[in-house]
Amino acid sequence: MPSIYKPTKAEVQAAYNTTLPDIIAPNLKILFSGINPSLYSAAVGHHFARPGNRFWKAIHLAEFTDRLLSPFEDQTLLDQGFGLTNLAARATARADELNAEDLSIGHQTLAAKIEQYQPKYLAVLGISAYRTAFKQPKAQMGLQKEPLFNTEIWVLPNPSGLNAHYQLKDLAEVYHALYEFATQT
Image 1 (cartoon, rainbow, N blue to C red):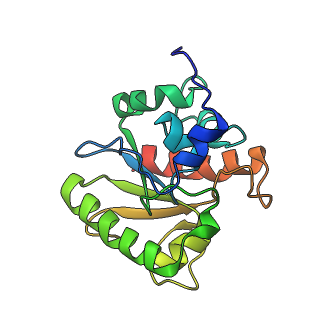
Image 2 (image 1 turned 60 degrees about the horizontal axis):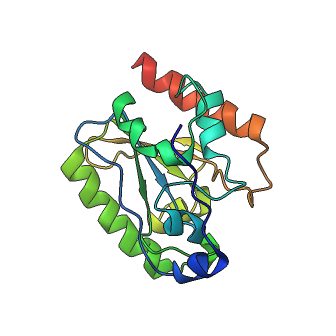
């Protein structure tokens, strides 16, 4: 397992409004899209790296990975046909620091990535951000009615530790629904 880097408080604060590179390739099975990078993730340069974020545990429990990966192994997802991006590029302390314009611009940028890379599925991790960015105020969790180009869209709960609506077991269950659907089609 790669060594884990813990940033200083100053490094975390300096990450405000910086960006995190995508982990993406053509024809992925699933492109996971977070809302935006946390300051911690941007500071260390890896997706879902903030302690307390449950993404890595959820995808492991949902059977996407055969073992629990560290955020510092995020590049290895490409080997399994999965990628990582964000709806909004700029890092913030909390997703609610983004405004509707950030999410609208993020939607346009994400659409361009979908058109270019053509993943089979896009998994947007956060219902409120999805509703705003995609202008779908009544969207529900799960498979969406309208694809983006030829990519089917799934909306899943945000894995942030700040999302108290879903415990880890609940996250794993809804993430597993996507896993089962994607591996059976």
